[in-house]
Length: 607
Image 1 (tube, rainbow, N blue to C red):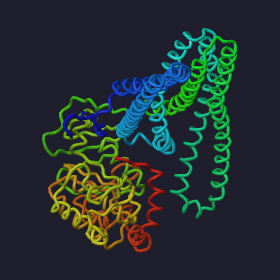
Image 2 (cartoon, helix red, strand yellow):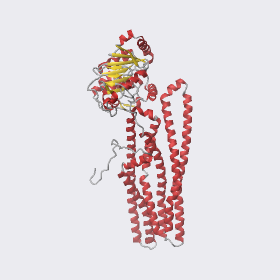
Image 3 (cartoon, helix red, strand yellow):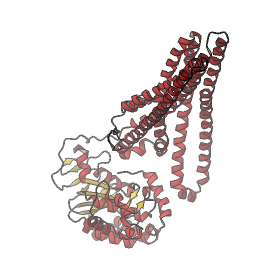
Image 4 (cartoon, rainbow, N blue to C red):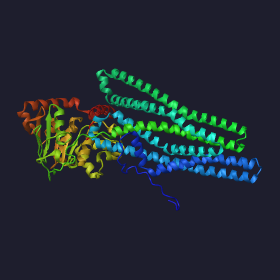
């Protein structure tokens, strides 16, 4: 920074946004304003000075006419002209600073809203897709956040407009009480005309946003399940429904546009009518000799200056109406609460070291340090056991004799990791994708890649681990995504790893390699996998066979094959289907991406 130049406070996109006021739309907008009072006050002050100085220009012009032109005083004319030029130059600088200040206020509001929404979405976790539609979240992210931020930029000009309105009325009072009265009556007339339209706009805009969220969600459903719909012959049915929703949204958009057009017409028309009325009255007063020529010029200039503030006041009503509607939608999201977690503030101590996890509902007992496999005819049964063991829902599981739901959730999450085969993959480099919030060493990444048989993924990418990966891993095939999820779980290196169908989308050769390496990579650590694949089950230290969600038999894979007919039938059927149905790793990235999108949209699992 150069000497003498003040350093502006930067906008920190990572700072704590604070606790939002969720009582309503107006309360939220007021909270955003209160979070940056300096900018709000500076913007209002600069806007007021800017507009008042614009009103000073007609006065200087009138003095130049009366004192200079009419009297033939060249010195007076030059002096008033120079003052007019200086005021104009200074006001141009004030205008620049006003715009910069309001831009920073808008950016701060934008970042702050994004942060509170994202933080709350993370807090909701797996409950988010059950509480609110994906279309609603998308609409908030791409539309409402920007609308809220933009609505705050009218604060400065709006306050400045009111200030200059009062100043001009006061100046006109010294010129003509009649003209001052007309100017002062203009504000109530504007409120009467614009007020009802603001209410109508909020109602129409709110309904439009609701329909937009529904349609956005339908687009996501179509994009994710188009292949399935086409195969079932339901594409036409959904296309017709989409067309009906589109027509409803279009019609509602016309209603919003109708109200908006009236407000914008008033923003242009009212100042023009205002200017015409006051100018006509001033001209009559000048013709009657009650105003000088200079005063007539100044009155015209004052009223011409008021054209901008009046338009700003109307625009302020329009922007704030839209901002309140958007803020209400954000507040509705922020009011959602996560699923009850009775152990979130639990006081029970977690076991000091590795301990047995026991699920009374199913009879599953997880012995520390072993690779345990859960096999069942219904994947939903084994997934439900994993949810209880990982405490993703009501659970009676005990951990070393202590109820799991009485241990603080933070301690549970530190030591027990649920790796869902549909867990989301966020956009970023592959290194960031597998490392998460940590920065694992290259050697650790290499070991995890080998254990997940994922070296070929890195080798096939142009920049290796630094290659960008699209959101939800759409630039990868289905099998590649599954292996990347496994690499991420292995790098986390939890004390207890609970993996749901970690190899379901892989070919037999890759699955066999993972089965052998997983046991080695997790040696001495507790690992539970759900699977009905004989390739994976054969490497497990212990297999628990579930029937109707309860343990029917346990032991080594080969022993169960000989002693349990139901288990043998389950595993044999899986072996028969392995060749023909489980080779998604060979699919192209685009095809597999559509396939996974179907599953991810249906499940929405974010662990």
